[in-house]
Image (cartoon, rainbow, N blue to C red; front, side, top):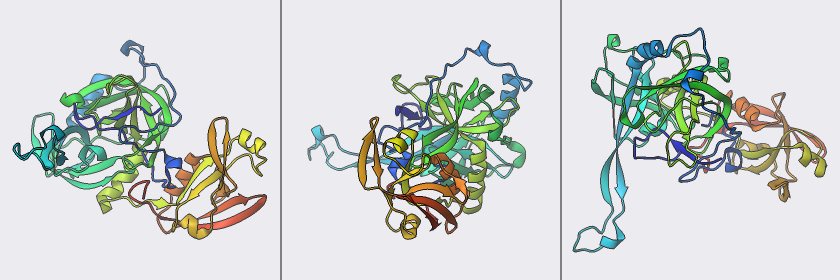
Length: 404
């Protein structure tokens, strides 16, 4: 499915959807394309949004308790940017004086939350992307200027900082997103359509989703929820029944509704958030390792029909020039075939292992690369025809976007 609306640019400013967990294989065939108005979800399954009375009972806090504890730490983020507006061709006349592009100021609304007493605030990258000025406002109505400490388009995360008394700040604790299970109760707090500190509740509808980041890379291990989130919720927290942040609300599936909530939202998992914000606070940016290939999984039908030497692995479809993969000698397929409506390039290397770990799917390879730094190496085992070959791949640095 590819009808997705990003939820951070304020009401009426529907910015299209965009999470590269840092894998950075490289290539749209791996990550999915980021069009001007669409993005891609992999493995999306339908889920039914339960009524509030149908929410599972837990031994955790009530929704009201969670709200009272967390709401003071949730902020509204207002970003101001300058955009270029092309002249109306119907009035492209020197008498009207409207013959050149005009600069206009644009404001966008999103959400965020305090993470420490030093004044750091987490939000989405797409909420503050291109901003000339950022302000945050709290539940008591106070508003103050915020500086952007760092941002990471590959995970759609950003860190802001405000100069405020530590006593005035209510940091929200980050939980362990690996512990969540489908059906767990969750609460979202944010500023949909500018309605400050709105709370909604639901469940974890699915886990291990993959969504597309603003720069075209993939964000893995994403949480799907039916808690109502809409435009303006971006950057706000998704909390578990203990009041811990287990995700940052980032995207929604809009279907054919024209941009509103249809009970399918996506949150960047807190364990990804922990890793990214630590680097953003320390360095102002995140360096990710990069292989430089696009690949597709081998299917049992593909292996059988074309008599491939293995039944599991990744078919290398392209190799980016000057990348670590190219320097190591990885070879891409050159023979185009179609099977069951899917197109493949055969004849290239089939990657079966990386550092001794089997790689039958892209998620596994992305996780292995995400654990590395630029300059590190991975030992690949590939099949080249019927021959088993070992290659040492030195990882490069992820480019700013899929297109490089």
